[in-house]
Length: 207
Image (tube, rainbow, N blue to C red):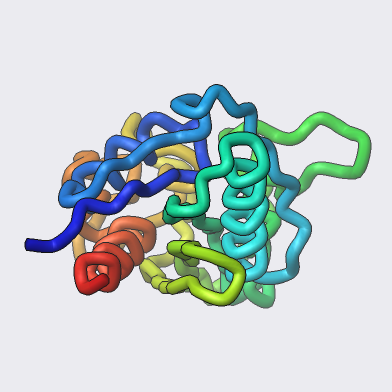
């Protein structure tokens, strides 16, 4: 019988924890809160891979230092939206898109409106969500997956109330709706993060 692994998610996001708990249900998933640890990590790398790996390494080291636990597997990810007409931007800066140094960050609606403004009159509206996810067991041992979800940027934000971030402007031609207009279950099945998590879970299930 396969051993049940202890996975530590490098995030306090409850939606992300619920989604990954379902996908990685063979294992036990915790968050930093379960260790009474406040974990923050500044994502300064130029790639999704760099941010995901750096975040996983930082949390793994913190738990080792404070709890002496060497047997955890840390799960970390970084994701964003890449728009072809913006040379792949905003990319790793998706959450900080349009925010000047020292100024408050735009909210989701503000970032979506800025994106639509930058693409006003642009014919090529192809885009993709990207997620890099890593399972970190130690400094010389980790597994990494990067997946995408392709779509186009809509002409205007939809009225859908589902999802978050850029979902109201990320249009899925095969469904004829934006991500904000599909169910959470459908999003988890199709999304870049869901796909990456399933592929990583398949690797973990072989260990």
